[in-house]
Image (cartoon, rainbow, N blue to C red; front, side, top):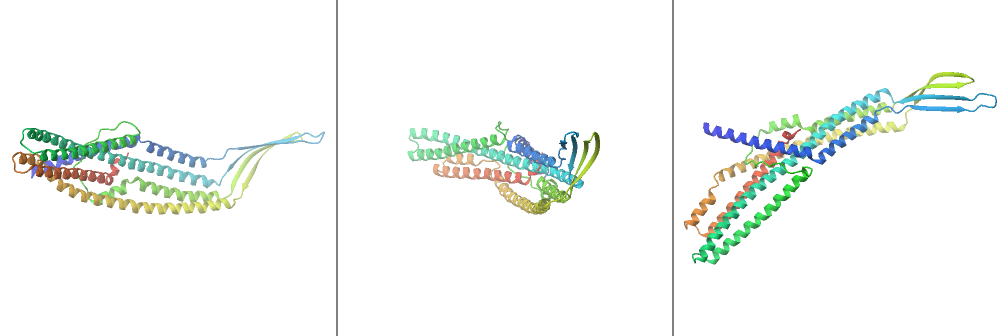
Length: 391
């Protein structure tokens, strides 16, 4: 029992190390991805637009000069003024911009996580591809040795041309599968380079052959605590409500204060002027638009919550089902002694060549499917545990 516990602990530690390697590589790729960098720049630009809209307009300067009749001194005057909205509008806009800044930071984190997840799943696909290539290369070498043995036996009259031809056909089939797998592997590497901003590919960890699933409630709690998309929606909702408040205050009268200096009949006059701009129909329409935008954001928040919880449940159920299937297959391929047993049976004459080739082909198909299942499990777990990729 003690040995089993120690082995399980060692397996869990190995899985954790492999997962950490995938996470580190995926975060590095997401950080170098041009789309992620462009998203951050766009969010910063939108935030600066909001801040610029909440700045006082530039001061206004007016100069007037009046020509008097002959014998009377001309008159002139200057004024320097500043227009501003209803004071509460600036505070409301500032509050909305603060919420929006927090939302944009969370949206950036959400996009980073999704791009890192894409990178991690691509790395897993490459790791699976490497396992498939390893399997097919071993099979190709096995068929080459078998073909050489039977070619020699045929030359010595110890076998038939039918058996030699059968081996040649199976060898062609395996080499053709190997060539296709190599092309697919190269395509995956090219996709990874593109995702990495055109830079070289990081080292790809080994394909994890198991998973360590936690309870559904733990994943739900993790989603509630760490989901940047939900946090962004909450802040965007608060920003939309602050925009409604700002629109209401913008509909109130605006003001203009000015310093005035006039020169008339040899005297200089100093004073000030106050102007009031009464609201038009436009600000009222802006209030309605802001309310509609706030309502739309509330609906978006609810829709996002439903979709993200559905995604969590789907990912968890898929991981659970794949994990049970992989667990059963893992025991089947634990020692991987079947190919050697088949060859011994063939050499001992207990099975025919045709039986050997049929059984060996079934073994290749089964183990290839096993690696496919392991890849699907790793990708599903990556989606389920995507918050481990948060920057």
